[in-house]
Length: 271
Length: 271
Image (cartoon, rainbow over all chains, first blue to last red; front, side):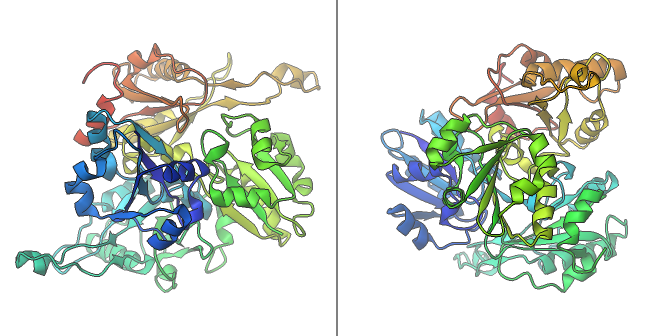
């Protein structure tokens, strides 16, 4: 009789908390939210681990089939699994509000997300300003609304976490124009693409929010065994291979001695 | 042969991840860091749950007995447990760097911390500016260096997470003056004290960073069964009883419709 929002953490099936695992095992239906982030493990591994079927909930399902997800949750427990922490994004707010409106108790089981695990790179969490999202450029759309935010963070000496675009099961524009949805293959923005787009924007705007020599940290697959953290200037990182997704980029603000000492371990070049 | 930094999450012994629990159970020595935050559960519960002794590491131990903690970690696994996520604070950096210098592999197991779990209150994580720490006023010391940071966040419409002071095993100034350490009882700042101090600072400075009518959210024991979230103006929240620690305060910036809809559930007064 509870709708559980359960954070799965960052990497594999064992990153769920013990409390989360116990809740999942008591649920009648288990949904896996799979469009605001991706789990670095296959759904089949989760099913084997839980001993239960897992229903992949794509954006369409979560946005248009809320009733189906909530159906019966007043009589039995239902789990809604989210990669990272359940409230890293606004996306699940509607589901939460709808459940409450129907009198279904909601319980949240937190976990690590990139928003706090990024502390692993050595730049201190309380010295970050506003986080930004960087989306893929298209031929006609080159969004740069995050630029003033990076500039404002850097003016105050603060670091900026750049969350990089994830396109999972997006209908192609061409197919929408024809009135029949055909999905594009999944795409994940690399640190390299993010830097390329950022430098293009700086070249256009020339306001000096950052540049090729700005110290950054590229991180990939944080929390997994293949985690990669590399510190260097934007130009240096542009050429680094970070491997498979997910990637994030941190644009450093002013760095303190202790931050520099940790970053030195991850540096492409010595300070 | 690994020094594990393991996040314990927010509330009780079952908030550890499955991966973290497996690591703990394979360790020869287990330290519990107990001065930058507090666990809402007794050490004895952890020991029972792990089937192992847990050594409480206070500030003195972590700062002056690094060698003892690392001793043997090249031959057997040692765990360093941290409430929340291991890298919510800089504090453990030195231990990490020393281990690496000695050639001891370090492994980090992430978990939820207040830095991301605060998303539960409905204000979106990517709309927070720099976080601030509010420390207890003393008769002669009334630190307010966070004031310009709150002001800058609010000028940009951003929310501010205020981390509230924790005093665990602090030697009293009087005893230090006498050259013999006597420890003060543990103290945790309440939302009420934080608001009182904040309003006093505003009255002194009169720069209008915030005021009695500013919308805030007080949160207590996030992630536990007794979690409390109350939204209201500073004056309204000043009179709310949030119960036992830990407390945090969020000073809202501009709120979007969806944020208001969630906050309405936690409001002392209707919007």
